[in-house]
Image (tube, rainbow, N blue to C red; front, top):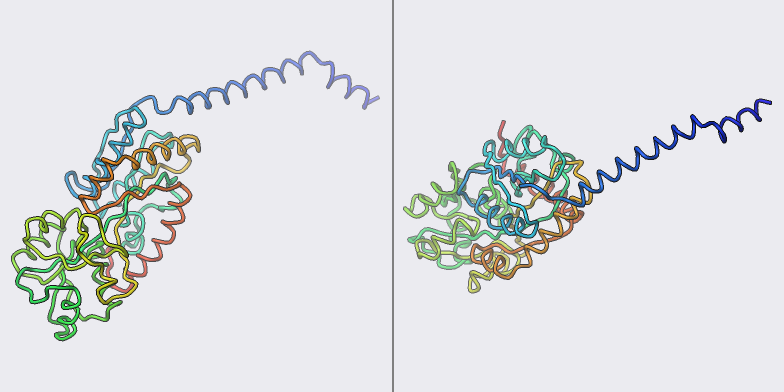
Length: 338
């Protein structure tokens, strides 16, 4: 009898059939609404958090590339500069934003790699707090020296430093910056004894190089290019494994006596963790199409950068490797920010 009653209630109860019908309709409605919202993405302006000051090298590259992505998506991008703590302030804000695809976070090897060893607590996890979209570009650096320095080539510079250990100086934009760590990597790789002179930003460092107060600097191309074009400093070698299009006659550090040397800055775009996969895929597709634009590639090359599009998965693995690479460089340098 209990079995019979159970079967009768399950199969025949009008109340149960009505409840099951309502539940199914509700689930279909929710799923349909979510799908429709994703399909319509984006249907309003998108905010881009740039964790650096307006007008700086990072901000300029971010606006150049992501404005082109906005064209692909058909919605305007609203850029918001939230600088502070080497980019940590803006990155923290981005990590806490709604995971709906309407907040993008621009980042670099500084915010996504260097800062997580340089600072005791950067305030965010680049792997757990964000969903990767794509790498954007790879940015070469160049060894620039003051005009009166006797060395005219990279091999001559290496020999000069070795002949006079502890005498020559290299400037940087500050402790733990790309220009600092590139110098530290050169010191350790080429076994050089140089004195690091940190500044509060790339501009004052370059000014002192121009006035002859320091001997050299390994500066990223977007910042060094104007001075090179004006012949105010000499560029001896680029930091990447291969030569850069904007300086075709300038050799690499690797081919100038330091085999295997390959250091570059880079940038990428991410969204808060939990952003729906279809939205991530839509954003990635827009980035790939934007970075394939010949005019954008030309503009990047003029600045010493090259487009570096890729999958979301590739960016995740890349950041993981860069955390270790730059972290090791920070540890060797002894740099630390509380």
